[in-house]
Length: 117
Figure: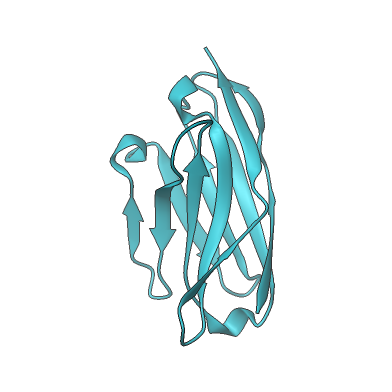
């Protein structure tokens, strides 16, 4: 089992930057992939970025070139650096990990990102 605590969300003007952090605790040595999802009002939750234990990364097309995902295994933390933010990036952002032999999904509580035009 793991617990995830997110921070770094807030209100920012279009073109600005934010860095989201997600700190994992518990059996962190059993974490495989770590990633970020987002969900706008009335829309389906979607993958934003993922990073594997070996360092591979994958990004959704709308954020490629603007967002960077990274992880610090010593601290058990995953980050999402967001630059050149657009109003369409406004959503609740959720930390996600794949855990254990079952590769179960575990979720953070979510942090609100609002980008004004």
